[in-house]
Image: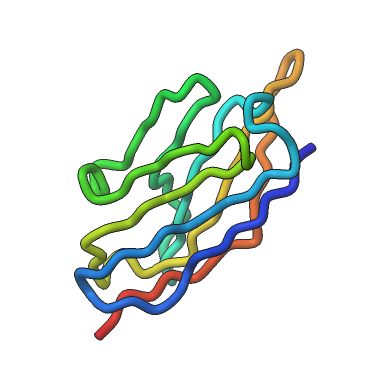
Length: 119
């Protein structure tokens, strides 16, 4: 199992930046992949960015070149640097971790952090 604690959300003006943090309760080397998802009101939760234990990254087309996911293995923390924020980036952002067992995978979620982009 793993517990995830997000931080760093808030209110920011369009064009501004925020950095979200997700602290894991275990070494992220032992986690197959970690990612950030977001859910806007009335919409489905969507993948924003993900990073594997090997360092491979994946981004939604809508945030490529705008957001950057990174990991600090010493701190067991994954970050999402969000630049040039737009009102459409407003959502609750959730941290996700995928652990792989013998024959199945397990998803774990943080509690979510609100990001609001508004003037």
